[in-house]
Length: 427
Image (cartoon, rainbow, N blue to C red; front, side, top):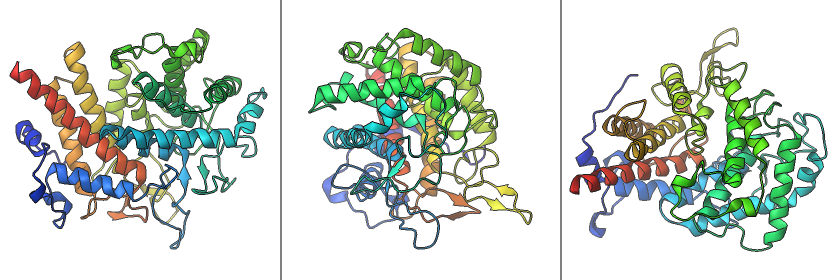
């Protein structure tokens, strides 16, 4: 991997500490700001995408220069975009975002309950599946032109709502019984469409294939609510989620067997894919050996100068040759953020279990720092994360909401692990 940046961890921790109010100026280029100022500026750009109902438009782009409009809601993007709020302590905003997702699921509950009655793969079946994209005000479906059967949306929702409840936050604030019935129907839907063995359209909305990132997402969501101890180390107090939504052990066994069968590949057509990083963070649903394979595959094959390509041969915004074949795939800065988060989480894990497969805590922190700096080098001068680069040029989706959020998560995750190192040094 080229472009390595050597980072002094002591200097970085000092940089990430609070700054005096008279130094909080943002008229300088983003890269010249202190870490605290960078965080504030980056978060302000994310806030500009937040709507009054708690959702986030994917980007400000309205389609005036061609292509799809991005000033709309993607359900997955909203959930990842709101992650930044957790990492700065703004849980009220995160609750609003997840309650909006619940509202949307309630609005289209007839599709979830209808799908649960099927006994066959739904395919794209836009009339029978909850759409991945809706209007930001009316919440009406926008298009049926591509595959909306995306299992990871439900997996992420189940995983994070369970996580928040176990952390003491009331995601389900009203109509609790009605929402619990909705959750039950989602589980029925997932098991009826055979989430562990049937194809979907995945994180990138392409397919259909069986995607390890989709299977792992649903497995993580069901595991969180099954409450068998897999995630217990994350919580200071235990909340018995299984009493609210019982998940049979059989579902987890089927999912685990399917995930192990597909890995280390993302799918039959893709030996590796950026989306597989989700299996390490946020889900932490793979073994150490599987995580090592995922990271190594992505770093060896997908990391580029301006970001991480989604997969080999990705045609979305790709640079094509004269015959229309992919010459260079688009590079996503989002990938740098994700790798930085993964490495900081693994570094934090070393304090609990000791040295890991990819190195010592010091080595993991250095990798996290390196990827964060590489991410910042791709951002605009005013601190926005673009969706992607093609041939060295950004496309129109600036900033991309969930990429902007993951910058905040990456920055705060690294700060936390550095603080943990510093605290240990004081003992």
